[in-house]
Length: 335
Image (tube, rainbow, N blue to C red):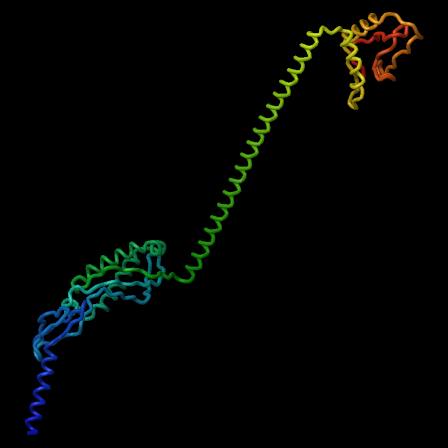
């Protein structure tokens, strides 16, 4: 019994092992190649798959998702003979598991080496300035070359990105000095523009202020002139309306002379001839009077009239002492 039990147990174990080898479960977004008797037979799709045990050989799963590979910095010589370190990132996807397994031994290593050689060819035709400012162009050219070369390997290159471009330290120092000089230049230009704009605005303000002040002074002068004109017109109308006697006007003029004499800047007077005739009229109006002879009017240097004791300049009593007499004054100014 024991030998039969052992044989039965061996048969059961063999059947279980055979069943396990016949059933293969492939995860989603994966693929597995199957060889039958050493030749490619088929590719297992995601899900439950049945193979022939001990006849079919199932290879490890190939990832069909988009993969990201970052390559280490690679030294590249530019057209102007400068060595720069360039880091690249590659985005690719396996589209044909059979070609990825049988057309290339290691598609990942092949993609890396192809990226490096293509990058050197592309950057070698550019100078440093173009390399630093033409990343999009470099990415586009790299993607075109890699996608064409890896198509027969069952790969599709979706995107190639340059992470960093590191020029030599001496070049970096020179670039920093250049950028600092550019910033200083921009700052100086901005400061000069600000000062220029400030001066323009100040000049415009002064111009507007001068214009407004001139307009104000002109308006004030016009108003003063209009006021004086109206005042003179009213006085003229009042004189003609009341029919004032010339002797009254002459007497009013004599009252005004002391006020004119009190000014510090008055060095000479101009006495018109009308005043002489008015004074003669006043003397005739009052007639001859009784009294002592009138003192002569005091005169200043060179015959100039000076105010008397009663504050009336140039007015002296008449011959009879009862009224003022017209002084003998001509019209020439005296100093």
